[in-house]
Amino acid sequence: MTNVLDRIKAYKLDEIAARKARCPQGEIEALARQASPVRDFAGAIQARIAQGDYALIAEVKKASPSKGLIREDFQPAALAAAYQAGGATCLSVLTDAPSFQGHEDFLIAARAAVDLPVLRKDFMYDPWQVAEARSLGADCILIIMASVSDAQAEELEAAAEAWNMSALIEVHDAPELERALALRSPLMGINNRNLKTFETSLETTRDLAAQVPEDRILVSESGMSTAGDLATLSGYGARAFLIGESLMRQQDVEVATRTLLSNPVRMGATT
Ligand SMILES: O=C(O)c1ccccc1NCC(=O)[C@H](O)[C@H](O)COP(=O)(O)O
Picture 1: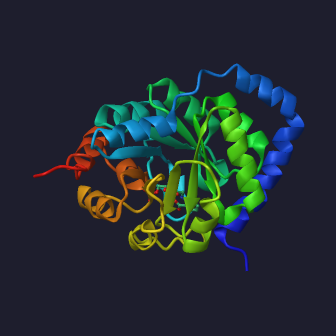
Picture 2 (picture 1 turned 180 degrees about the vertical axis):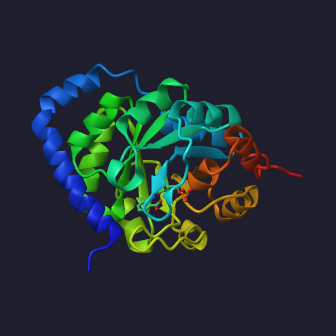
């Protein structure tokens, strides 16, 4: 029986083939070379954590397969600016249209409104997509271990490195984490949501955190809504957080972002 991730992969592979036919590798690389300079995504997260603060990757997310439409009044540039003003370290922008009502233009508009590094949140299978992401201005790509082979993951990571981009490696269980640790990226995302069933539990981060080596940055993803959630996850070792829906549902996104980040558990703090 197919699951959501399989269905997304099937249409994404068709989408990639159609896009490559319209714009072959050489052309997309030429466009990527003309893009605005890369902003250091992993470096921004490392710097924020080094200050003793939480690093928030704030997601610009209109809709999702699990929740349908999340935000009706959806203006990517204004949302990006609100996230930056509220203290986000980086942005994540969904560009997948069929399942998330996303669009490449949302990434372009959001990135132009801020000076934060931006993750292209999409389903990646082909190095062509990495060049495409860079041509849009993206600074980071996502590699979902549940949806790619080891060889594909290595190829995507190498493509990101070749464009000086960061790669967020995403896992949901111990076997995926073990495979992910063969990659070089410092950004290790633990998705609290099972993308095949939508079941979401912060205990996923708790259960896997001990297996993430000290030299990787543990990014907890999905299902968080309060400063208490961040404190709990921080207790498990997470210092970076990828959050979309709960912030997208707030009327004042800037205030909600600031409130969420208001009580970091400061590493090394004595009081
Ligand atoms: O969000 C979904 O329903 C979803 C379904 C299938 C594949 C991916 C999906 N989401 C991608 C994400 O990982 C989240 O957008 C991201 O971690 C933020 O999660 P949240 O804060 O719960 O919106």
